[in-house]
Image 1 (tube, rainbow, N blue to C red):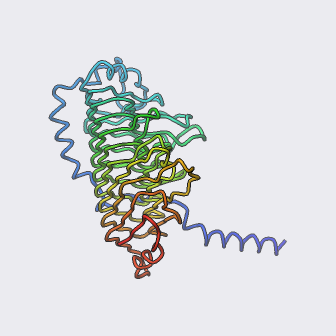
Image 2: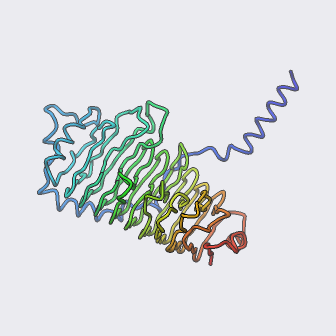
Length: 379
């Protein structure tokens, strides 16, 4: 019996030593990484529009509550269907997993105390705010809180905060999205033939979502400016920002990610995974990632490989991926790569900085490890 107890204790100690450091711990975002004060311009811009906006508070039933405890999804949706410029009630509002569908040529303004709070759901797939096959939508300062902490089901990983699919000319200013069962923001396709076009997201603050902070699945023309994505954990990939199309029917082109901060994401800070994109039609892929800062994510940057089982009819991807002036620090591994980039566009990393306590020459080590890989260059 003593031997068994000793063996168990030794095994437990070994497990703790090997894996305890991998147990995720939520960390508050350091003030130096916050984009809240810089995003104040969008509060000012939104305030200038509220005078002519329909107040959605008028659509609520008599005796409405202001504590986010009563579901007002239907009332809000009815008003969104009939008004082009609206302002959300200036207090938290509970919605259910049907979410709210925005229409073309609309402007939705969240006031300083506005937020949408998701009622506990057992669905593996939902979206709180949906833009599906719409055009010309402006969304100001949305605050969304999902049900990650009190989700009543176990399956699925597609509970989204803001879901943009097959839409055009979408502008989202300073979204704050947290605690979604899947992704904070998802940019994808509603059908197999139409990517999003001209999507602009400014000063996103995305925290504590379960699968990814921001997923970029299909878009031609995206500006993601000054996003801060933190504490993603719960189910793989657990990335801050994940550029990952689902099939060769999608597009990933003309993307600018400027000054992104990824902090303490359980698995990855930023992912570029294009393995499913090659097909019989050659795709252009052009991505610029400028001044990416990752602090404390498991792996700062994963440059996914092209390891798919391609046929003779499938064509390599064309275009260029540039990652300029990244700073990766306090990671278990700063950079993850693949063996095969034969079908990838040309990928160039410029002026990398790796800050790892107790270690030197990390960039030189990285250059040596990744040397002589086709379509991958580290300057």
